[in-house]
Every structure is written in C-alpha cells, then in structure tokens.
Length: 204
Image (tube, rainbow, N blue to C red):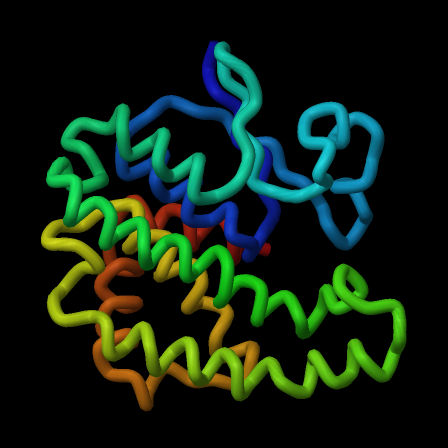
C-alpha cells in the first residue's frame, strides 16, 4: 500500500512530509483540521489514539512520533538521511532529542498549557515564559551549528530543526540575532522538496 501521512498545517508534521519528499518515497496526504477538532474525532483516534500528528499508516502498521518517523524514513532513503558512523549518528540524534523534549515542549506552553496545568494562573505563567525559553533554545542551537548542516551532510535532523525554527518568530523570537540558525533555516527552506511542502502549508 502507499503510505498515508496524517498531518496538519504548520505543525511538526511538515518535517516528516519533507523527509518523504526528500527521499522520493510515494505517499498520500490526509489533512487533519485542528481548528475543527478533527484530531479528537473517533475516526482519527482510531488511527492515532494520541490525537496528534504526524501519523503514518504503512503496510506494516501505524507509526507516530516525529523522531521515530524521521529515523524510519532516513533508514530507507537512498542515500541515507542519517550518518552511518555511530558517533556522528548519535550526535545528530542528540539534536533531535533536544528538539523533541525541550524546544517543542517550550513552544507548546504557549497554546497547550492545559496539558500540564489546570490552574489558569499557572498556564499564564507558562505562556509568559515562552519567549525567553525559546530564545535560550535558539541561542543554544545557533551555537551548536558549525557548518551547513546539523551533521556532516544534509539529513532528517536538518528538516526537524527547520520545522521547529519556523515557529520561533511567532513565539516572539526572530531569527536575525542567530545568524547560523537563520542561515540554516533559509538553506533548508530553499531545497526543492521543502519548498513544495511550504507551498502546500501556506496555500489558501
């Protein structure tokens, strides 16, 4: 079967879609409308009980969680989109883990504070910290970039970083003060596969 990617506009699913495009892997798209609450609809929860995107339906089952999806795509892509050297691969995974466990969570405190707190005051406090937390993340990521790509060659971690950095201006953190991160973001966005993804996510 042709894999089906369940995705939503502007979400972290963009980097998974871009990875599929970069790898030239046939796939179909199923858009989930968050504004309409489709992620909580029974038919989508039957696909992904977590009620989140991305989710990829394959002939081997359903795969969720962005790092897992990117790892799988990287492993079957030709050429591979993950270093073959164990140390270099671990360093790339280090960045991907940081994006998943720290940066994405800090971003989510702006709109998804109810995941962590019921008290409105606590949610407001989390929201108030978003800009400073994301600025700290951007500074760290900028300092870590010492070449064109996260690893020695372009790979899925670059798509992941690009996707997350797309959110920074909306979180009150422009990319201009972080020249290496900004250049990396523009470099990834200029790739034809990524440009196709951007066009789909920004179309009326």
